[in-house]
Amino acid sequence: MRCPYCDCVKSKVVDKRGSENFRVTRRRRECLECGKRYTTYERIESIDIIVVKKDGKREQFERQKLERGIMKACEKRPVSIDEIKKLVSDIELHLRNKASTEIPSNLIGRLVMTRLKKLDKVSYIRFASVYKDFKDPEEFQEEISKIK
Image 1 (cartoon, rainbow, N blue to C red):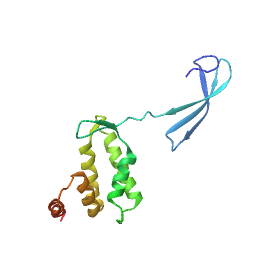
Image 2 (tube, rainbow, N blue to C red):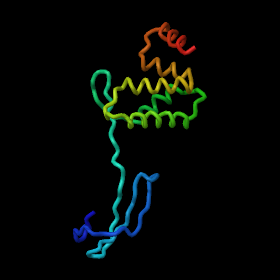
Image 3 (cartoon, helix red, strand yellow):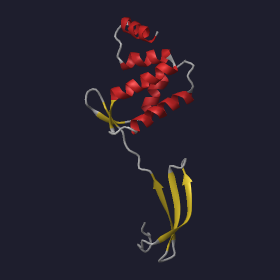
Image 4 (cartoon, one colour):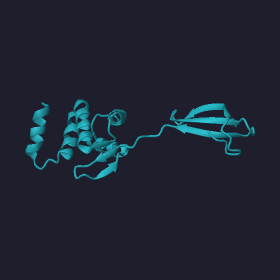
């Protein structure tokens, strides 16, 4: 770390604090050359997840978009917001632990369906109807018979 006043590389940490749920570390430093103090911040560089759509388009993963889709499927169902947030966090963690940062959208859909099936079967059917693009009632009936 270079001193912003004299450009010296020698400094000592005078104070250190975590902030933003410990995602950022604030350090108060003192230059050993000129004696002036300055603040530095250290944060983990987040890895961007790229979602590869069916048509080949690529877009950045949006946690809020995933959360909205799941909330819509769980609307008026006995599923708490905390359960939805945990489900979304689990899926995001799973995606971040993948070897590749490019994730096919169908993988995300399958992860959501697997977890929703355990959480609430009606929400699962709602999500599946959009994800699998049901065209007629027979497709609903087939999916319902699979989970019985």
